[in-house]
Each structure stands twice: as C-alpha cells, then as structure tokens.
Image 1 (cartoon, rainbow, N blue to C red):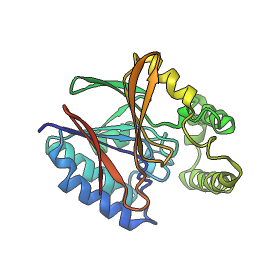
Image 2 (image 1 turned 60 degrees about the vertical axis):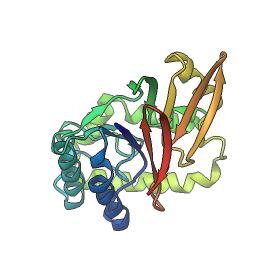
Image 3 (image 1 turned 60 degrees about the horizontal axis):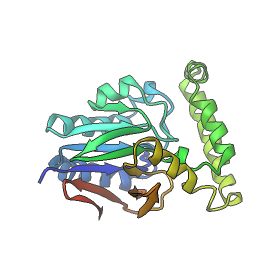
Length: 240
C-alpha cells in the first residue's frame, strides 16, 4: 500500500554515531519503501551553516537522503529549532525540498498540517522571543558572515545555556499549549496535525469548534525512537 513516513528530532551529530547508524539503516530499509519521507525539524543537533556541509558526518547524511530520492522516495525537510540555518546548498546535496513551517498537505485524502512544533509551545515566551530574533533574515545574514569556527563556538554556548535553563522551566512551558494547538487547527480548517519538538510521542484527539481533530506528536531518536507511517487508512507509530 502506498504510504508516507514522518520523523523529527533525530539530533544527528558525530558524538552520537549509533543514532546516525540507525538513521542510515532506516533510510535504506524502511524509508526506501515509502512514497515520501518528511523530516519535521531537528535532523541535526545543530547546523552552523551550509559551509559546514563538507564535514564527513554531514556529507554522509546528505548523501543517504540523495540516494533515497534517487530511488523514488521524495524527501521533504522542515527547519527545526536546531537546524534552521539549513539552506539551498544542503537541499541540493540531499536532493530534498525544504518546506515552510507550517505546511498543509493532502495526505491520502486527509488534510494534514505539518509543523516542527516549537511555535505551539506558547507558554515558553523567552524561547519564542529568541526564536523571532534568530529567524530574522538580517540576523542570519550577519551570523553567517562570521567564520564557521566562531559560529560553532557560539552555538555550543547557546546549547549549554539552553540545557541549563530546562530544569527551571515547567513541563507545561515546554509542551504544546492547548490554545496554540486549537488556534492552528482552527486557522487551517481543522486538519490532522503532525509535529515534533516536544519529545513526547503520543496520539491526541481534540474537539475544536465541534470538529474532531487528530494530533500526532513524533518521537525523538535519542533512545531509538519511532516513525509515523500514514496511508489511506490512517496513521500509526512504529518503533525503530
């Protein structure tokens, strides 16, 4: 049966070779049987700019996705909060299409809204302010003009600061807020919703304005993880 796969929050990096090996195996054995693969953010632990594409680890991931596309599986990538600086050079190397966040698709007859999920965490106002800053085109131009090594150093400092801040935030702050979820579903006509970011895989059912809406939260890959398989009969999470 024709089907499409969804993954997010792989956080691939040289320091986690086992996760990269799982990803490579998934691409070869599982994703190659699908019509399309959607990666809904945070493919990488971080992305300092497309001039880092020559790094062996990054080049290997791009090559695996390119081979997947050449085999007939369309590859779509959405920016996450860690790899929003991925741009045209990476997309070309991976033979993938970078799609905007959010994106509404027709998934075997069911309207389905795709988003990374960080904008749904409306309770985390400090993060949303930071997100607005770094997604600004002028900020990105200035940042990417700096030497690659300097960018990596700053990103590492930001990551450490983020990890230190996590214990200070409530679970509610770091989860999708019901009002933000309802607003997104209402805005796009009450579709199915698929997202990542929160690392809290689950299937939720929401009733919005009298409409029953399904929401799937994708798993992270830190400890093996799972993927979402969707076809004309619906969606199901599959452990890796």
